[in-house]
Image: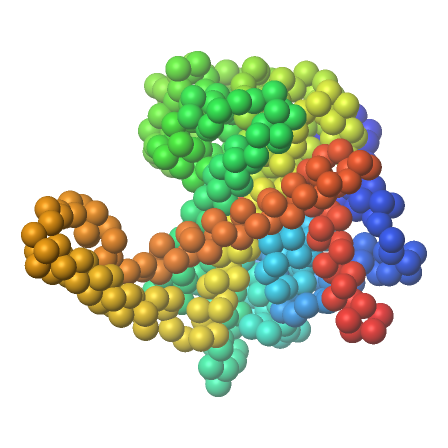
Length: 476
Ligand code: NAD
């Protein structure tokens, strides 16, 4: 993806790690132990399709087992390599530590263009891949729990869960072997939107900190902020939709594989997404003006740039020309190490991937807990909470009537106050809390130490400290 010779994705993650570790008091041995990827399993398997045997290459990398199970998505893309999967697995370790999800880091990938195969064929390929991983405990409720990533969705997760269950018929926790499943196979409300929702909550928290806004030269709230989004897939679509509909942000540009759409007054995210779903690209979409060179649109003036597609899109070849004062890395690794240095020197504020897209693994954590507890969140408490709230209102009204005081709560207030939280509300509340607390951990390090001048280094320090503490507790 990068135009000039610069460190690849895995080296970039290692360099970012090194930059932070150098500011910490870790023994060299422990530092090395945390940085290295523990293991990568490479599998080549054949599936008979369309009258011929096709061989596919897949990976499952386990970066750190300081906590188990290890966790991380499975990506379907032709560009998947061992280096990429290892970089993503490392990011998972740091991400889980930062948001206090009790997992080690892992990641998987299959070299495949999912658009070349029909649904039935993809199911056979996915089941076979899942079989290869599950028989080595690389899919397992207490060892290794995958989730969706680029090119996969809840459909693939349902196939994986079913494949695991067929191979482990007496495992009562089988459903917890993978997250991001559809609701009717043990999924949780709010998982599909979770990563994009986390981007929104992360930005909201950023805008609550006047000193952080000032560092980016921004003021006010998200309302009216001009936003560029690259990649209108699961993460980009939900982030753009929520920012537009709920925070009043203006999505001026949407960049996809076949170019981008631009409209200074704002694009209708829902309409662009609808077009993308029906046509497989944004070309021809009547919303805004179509520009063939999508990458050039990253360089437009805006308030917030959200790369939400793939790694390495901001590199030494374009970093200098990026005008956004604030970048939130919804994708993993969109800014290379060298580009990060250029942007920091320019004063660009970057909300790093290990924080920005952690909403997915956070809600995956909730789903895994739900699967292990075999009960949906809120089922026991909801009506009890409602009864308590109703009692209070009834009593206030009774006292007011008795003492002749004029007292009338609006029906809307009563309805909102009385209704107990359902699963979706609880998931959003848990995600919001997680994103706020993790941001505050980065913020404290960023502003509390003279040697830390950016959020990425702060995020790495917070994460590495927790992983190190966990290794130390094991006596390492
Ligand atoms: P997705 O497959 O749903 O969407 C990716 C989108 O990017 C697609 O619309 C695709 O057409 C577009 N795209 C691909 N190449 C592009 C290019 N060169 N230029 C512009 N657009 C391009 O994937 P996703 O799940 O939304 O993941 C996107 C990123 O977010 C990845 O880096 C992934 O690792 C990361 N992420 C995803 C999740 C999750 O829960 N899905 C969680 C954490 C991180």
